Image (cartoon, rainbow, N blue to C red; front, side, top):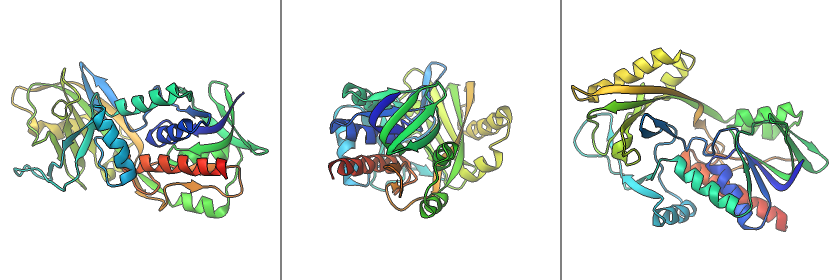
Length: 338
């Protein structure tokens, strides 16, 4: 059994920044992630000879705490300002400019997660991928977890960063009840799914500047050219996201009909001789928090230290996940020093 000060389930942005905050302060942290690599929805995939972001497409900055990190990433050459907007619902000339840069990551969004993971491990943190936690429970004042590979972990503090239904399932599997008010607060959080198609295209794709089209509320809510975005120099790759309502209705539809429909949405932007050479479908069950917990995290009552966090806490999307992780890390440090 491996012992640590803090066990974090989930190696997305929230878990990585919480882990970094704690590891920098000298705490021993273990992060477990069920994926082959860390990042969660900071997800980038090869398709043919190109790359495509298929989860989060960009991020913005509103809060000074996140600005501090983004400025450092930009100075290091990791992130860059892609645009301050794009066509919204039409091909009218001129991009929407709301004053907030849309940041992208050199090499794709997952490169940010990989950079944070590398720093975490360089500081002595333990990170295990392909490690699916099946249950968590308390024994005395310690948290215990079991994983599908037969490993057991013990820690004084537990941080759960998966989507809330998955986090609650881990507690239920370990027969660990929450107080009714905590259970009720978490039950209010809801998510919408997202169906995502990736296409490798040979030939020109005529999307408006800066290579993306956003249509909130439409069946096809997002189309982006990853080559024009700057992450796929070797090939033209296109990301298509279906909107939340469409994704909910068609989440169980087989891949091929969905790919045909999503590819049809791309056809108006293809030059006459352009061809789709490869296509893949990805499904995100908990893509977009639709009802959000008002605080950056929830600290459970009447249990050894237990925190729930992620992009459904205090604010959605990339910045929300980052600020949730930072707030959890700071709160745990305050608990250790109290």
